[in-house]
Amino acid sequence: MTKKLLIGLFLVVFAGLSAAPAGAITFRTETFGLQGAGSFMQSPPIFSGNILSGTLFPGTFWFKFDDTGWPVDNPGTPQNERLEYVLAHYFHYDATVGGESWDGYFPPTGSGEAQVKWRFYAAAGDTIGGMCPQVSITIRDYNANGIMEDDEYGSKVVSGNIVAYINYSGGCFSSFCGNGSFSGTLNVQNWGTMTEEWYVPSATSASGRLYLRDGNCTVGTEESSWGQIKAIYR
Image (cartoon, rainbow, N blue to C red; front, side):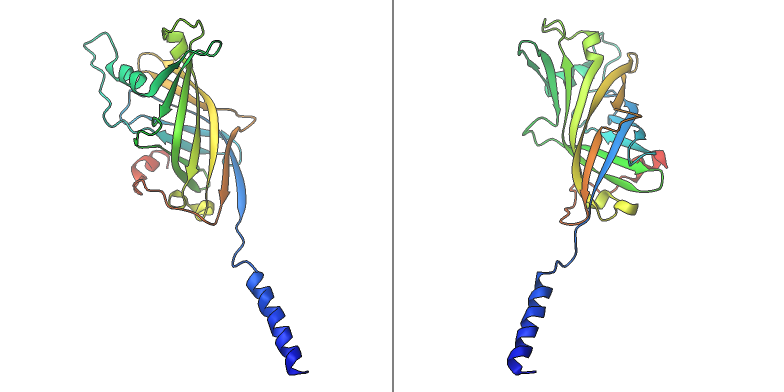
């Protein structure tokens, strides 16, 4: 075999090796339906419960809001100072004809406030979690009178985008990160305690979505110690 042919073969093999990826990224889609409860009267407000359906079923979940600076309700006054603060600080009225509503954003856009945190715990021991860039809650003004009535506040729509970070995952998700979304309802169950049901449908059709990958992942910037809440469901 001539020297020129050997050099040619070497270059072909080298080029083939250079073009081969160092490691292929695995993509996976996870689905979930959620049903739980919580209250903005809690400090911090935590909505938690069961994963109803989907690829993450069975398991548990929680969403935790940051209530830094929120007042407590004074039981000696007729008004609820804490709820009044939440409505005034996070919600704005949309007077669009036919779509009148109060729209709330946690955190408010551009505010720099802490994001909502979330965790999912599969019964098999796998965990995944991160933060929500924003959770939105809509209260419809059904009679368009600009006055928020109990039945309107009592039946709300909640939705949000979620980001999963690699440092909050474990088990089969230990190398995965990604993003997703959810939407559902947030309805008052008990007016005395202001307990509300966090519901992402459903038991038969999981509407929540997570799109994950095991490459090009970043690390979440929130504190890494969350065992005190995780322990609730272990």
